[in-house]
Image (cartoon, rainbow, N blue to C red; front, side, top):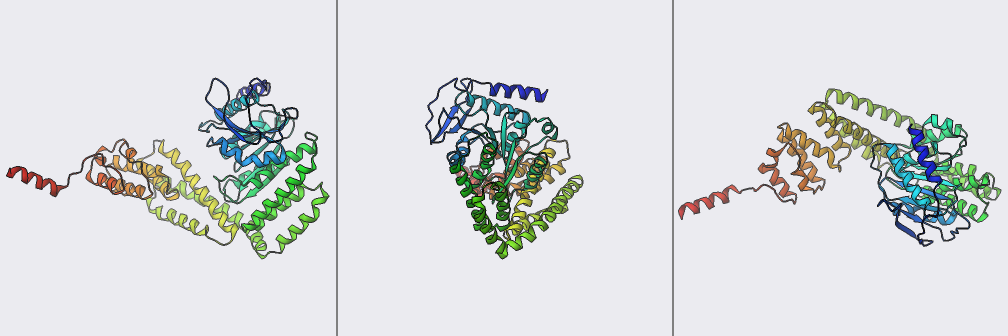
Length: 487
């Protein structure tokens, strides 16, 4: 039923009248806040390349960003749109649904609205997304044959049963941040699809899970779509586009080298050799660049570390998951110090000179944050004992010091339980992070006695807030009373 519902929506999408409404869009500029249809306030941003021609419809890339900042997302793809002739459209809707199905349906409405407005090549439809948007983008071609390719940044989603039902392969192009713990999962999906004879490619950039790739890496990832389409006669072969793609590929490799990521640059170079295998004119330049990288001492050090780190990282992640489960079961407050020490070690690791080790420390911190956050979300809404909820809340403040959620949870839980000392301790820790939503502190339910206390209100004033409950200065108040009596 799930698959049939989505297939019906996508069939409606692709049968939409592409020119049902006319909107003036300026070529070479991002047009924002284009309405999806007259019955909703939902909008999207769109970019038409300067050479856009309705008589020569361009391929389209739909962009899905979890934060709904469509204009910013489109800006990152502008140069790619010009270099490789694409129309770019990005939704301005945030992805806040818990259900992937709801997000897919929301995306389909956006795409449907776009097709009613702008003429593009119906045979060259691509979906790109970052993080949650990448998961939605990855799900769409599994239920619709008309999608030619997916660009998944940082994350992906796959269902092997849907892959078996797919009549023709689509292009899977991935971009992974070297500091993102999801990297290995993304690589496994790419390897699986490659084994199923899907055209695949993985590009790397120096960044974490919340980072967008640089424009050169985006250009390279989209180039996989372009070259595959030319190879299969879906697009006319164009030497100017191919030469530009190659130049951007080299620039991306040079960027990695300048950032000290020699082994990652080497992996990108091997990928480039495969990508341009049919173009002999690039052979010499690729060979010379390969020699340059391999001669560097740093490359040799990083190559040795690359494989050691993968195993070490896997063991460390297993330890984190195991000890967290055990500590939650036993409310092991004695082990809080150990968790704090792990975070300190990861922070120290992020200062390592060796790029491979440094990136591993970032990935492990990212993984630990995600693991604790997921556990926190489950425990807080469960019927677990209050000690268990306080324990996981404390861990959340350790792995994500700037996030107020864990602190607020402890203040409420401890305050409601009559442990004013713990509540006040974490209230001050929260305020030390720069937290300024003082009104929210007075709306925490179940701790009215604490909120009315002198200590609570004095602390609010100390950190720049306005005490909601009046605090009397005992000495001044006594003087006023004496004066009143003498009169």
